[in-house]
Length: 160
Image 1: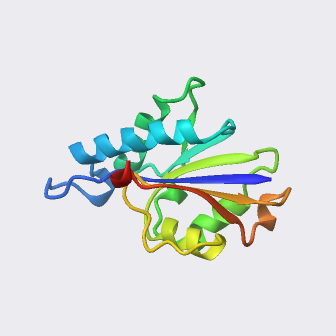
Image 2 (image 1 turned 180 degrees about the vertical axis):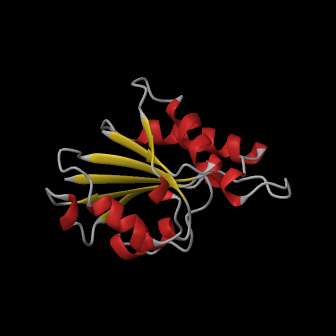
């Protein structure tokens, strides 16, 4: 069984005169990330083997805030390939994960996240909101074998 946790970055600041890559989280983004991270810890009953994040500031900060809720502090691996809005790029990265990894958490961006959930999961989701979390489970031994999985959890911070 392979478990994939997709944590969309928190709501970011606009109108700050910085590039898309360098946009930070807004106050609301920080607040909602805390809510989702706490809820995630309460809902899962497994350790997360590896954490990956887009190096964009808003994704990296979302990962750092989330790590505060875990007793075992993770190493957050930043990978430039994950600064993507493409489902295909994200799926390619996931299918190349080491098979000794049974669970992986990703911090990144839409449209890639919502599209991955809809193409690879068993339920339709109109949109994974900022600071939203989805957990997909795949009954396979190798990451490159993932196809249709099961959307086992969805966390929407506005509903908490």
